Length: 76
Image (cartoon, rainbow, N blue to C red):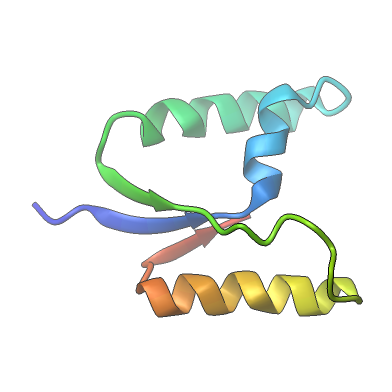
């Protein structure tokens, strides 16, 4: 079976340690365990620093990267 390509926004990674929002942290940990099952090809981008304001430009770069890679889903 072909693996599903997913693009992870950096917020997904940061929610692994989000003690201030325990519900998001719990969901992210469950999702992360699913990702580690190797049913997915996971991609991230090096777009982590805000070099291009405003935030909408940064978000559009994430969408563009996922599109170029050919991801089936963007997880944010």
